[in-house]
Image 1 (cartoon, one colour):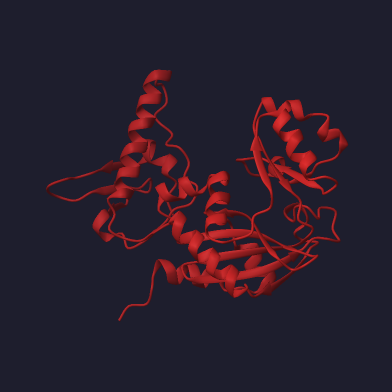
Image 2 (cartoon, rainbow, N blue to C red):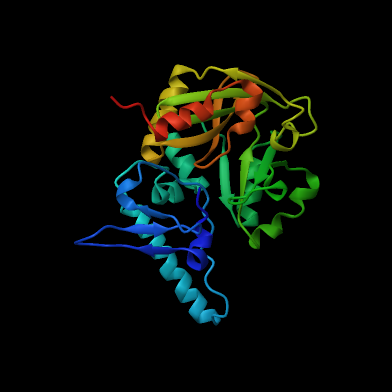
Length: 283
C-alpha cells in the first residue's frame, strides 16, 4: 500500500527509457522495480506533498513535475490497472456517465445539470407534481447526500448561479448496489423506505434492510456495455428499482466505490472477486 503524497518527501522515482528500468523508492526505503509489478489497485491517490520551504510558484512547479513522474511510472507498467487512472478520471464525471448509460441501454431518470435558475424551474415544472431530488456533481460525505426538493429549496434556485447541481426526477423504490468486478456482478438491495432517509440510503444504511439479489439479464448486459464504454474493470453502480413497476433505473457509477459494508451486510464475496481480478489463477 502506497500513499503517493508521501513519495516526494520520503521516497524517490526514476524513469528509464532506452536502457535500464524504472523504479519507485517507497517511504519505507524499499525499492519497487517496474518490471516486478504484477497488478495495481488505483484508488483516490492524494496530490504529492512537496518539500517544505518552497515559494508558491516553486511548489506549484514541483508538484506538477512529481505528478507527471509518478503518473508516468504507472503509465509505463506492463500489468493490469484497476482501474486505469486516466479512464477512471474520465468515467467519474456524472453527466458523461448518464449519457454512456443511456447509450448502453440502461434506463436513466429525467436529469438536468445546470447553473441556470430559469432552466431549473422549467425542468421542475415539467415534472409536474412528481418529486425531484438534488445532488452535487462532485463530492463525498454528508454535504454530498441526495436531498428531496421542497418549497424552501425552490425559493433558493438563484443559488445555482454560484455552483451547478444535478436535478433529477425522484424514483420511489428500493436501492441496489451492483459491485462490478471484471465480469462478475455482485448485487444487493438496500431498502431504506422505512428509515429517515428514503431518498439516500447512505445516512441510514445501518437501519436499512440489506440482502443479496440477482441482476436481470437485460440490466446486466447494459452494465457490461457501460463498463466497456467507460474502460472500467471495477465499478460500484447504484440503481433504483421503481416500486410501481419494478423497472431498474441507473443513478451513477463510482469507479472507486467502497464495498466492505455491502459485503458484510449481504454476504457477497466481493473481496475474493477483487483479489482474483488482481491476481488471477495461473497454470
